Length: 463
Image 1: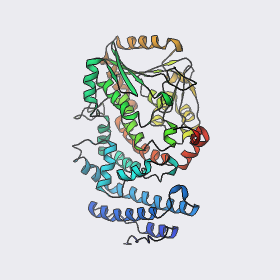
Image 2: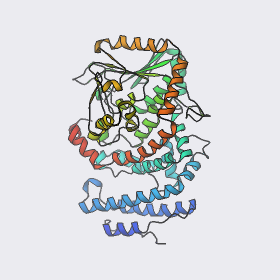
Image 3: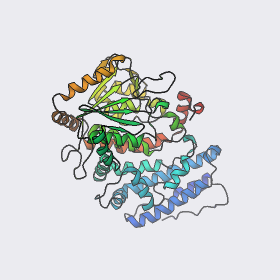
Image 4: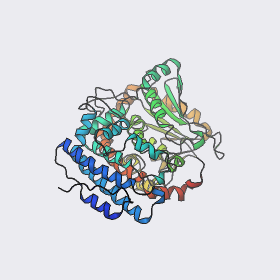
């Protein structure tokens, strides 16, 4: 068996060294401990080679090619290692699945268990200060790892279950909201009005876009809205914004904060935390620890959701509409999924949108930027009801009344009955496995940066 060459640290790494190192990749012996030691040595040598290259913005074409060779070979070796050992890592970190661990904890636990498999907290933090285009993309390895975990049926179900549990902070917040009927978390505010809990989201300087400052708060707010025992239904509406073009107007939301994305302030795990967390909870509810939330063997706690769309639902906000039980929209509102202009995968829209619009319109919306006016034939495939912009407040109250006057039990039962045929947990899990890997590569693709500069003028936007 070839041994991993010891690099000459006195000179910059070159293609010859990279190819020699790659040729020494170990094969899996099937023994976990033995493989951990041998593959860790191989990945350590890869890191040493990468460290001898100039920082990414200063690399020559030859150095860029050398870095690509090292990264590709290292990632392929991680794929092979995880094919053999993903289950063992997951079981060791979760106590044979007796303990629930969220994705953001799991990846760093794996970094401690298997050196070099995924980046450490320090390695991720070192890239956090860089613009997205200046990063080497160490977080891609998180996507590879999570793809293998989610692809394994039992581990994948367990991880999905972990992400559907209420966040620890949410328990006290539920009690506070139940007592006060109001909970202001900044980017998300909850208010009880009769039988409904109203969730208003706000990021006014960025057209109510989502970013790292909104994500955890949003999941806590969704937890509380669902778990609140005093209401039967939940309403999500965007708050007023500050942008000169829309100042004072409500907007549902502009999707991901593209300025933050370009500046490297959206970590890769943001996507998995979002789509396995609060967005999935909109669809499936909050899980109980002792029941697999697959609708067949176990059920969670859930409420019907109404979305009230003012202005537009772009990107991630359009994705969220696909999890709603009822969508009310202003007559002048529209929906877009500008994934091609951004260079990323639009969450779970590829899975969900075709069952609303059919395959052709879904592909046009995702791959060719087709804009859907809410008050159009195509828009009505997603939107249930249109109201005049000035009449949205009254329309929301009327819809809440209409959807709650028959009681909540049948509404929740019908949600589950639809869901088990449309998106069973196994389908969700399998899609999530593909999404984890592909989104990781998209997130660090040069095309992402080029798209943001060309279509968003990201280089010249204030941060």
